[in-house]
Image (cartoon, rainbow, N blue to C red; front, side, top):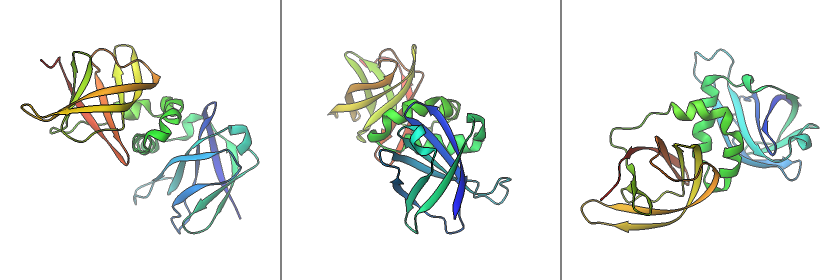
Length: 220
């Protein structure tokens, strides 16, 4: 049985699939076919009782969208799902679905950072609206770059600076304990604006999660 799915091609080499979630709640594991298409992350949406459109599954994929048009097979923990794709505009994703997709992309780890950049236009508003906890670590501008409070070393940073949004891998974190624990970060830009100047928003990206950061002035 073919499951109808909507194909949202956000950018060359990156797309989102949206399809009705079967009652078995299959957990996506990888793309069984076609070859050359990778599963970056996934999210379930519409599980709450008040959802008007029913439960759906969202898959963020890297690979050529043209290769998907003849169908996709998704390996899950239950059984493979065969999807029949129909092109759809970005508006096919609701605000709630974009929020869940944003959280999933922020939690996908460093291997998905390039695809995150290609899909960022779909989720930018959702990312910008994410709250910052009162006790969140802070990112600060200091001589030679940025530093972050605490001892939890991120794998990457997403930030919105004077030149716009950007994303970078953390290649080194020099931890010091004078006063309160703080780590000076060495960054390798992946996409978007360069990590310079004090960002207005920042997110620490971890292997399986993310933290919205506060930002502060120069550290002396």
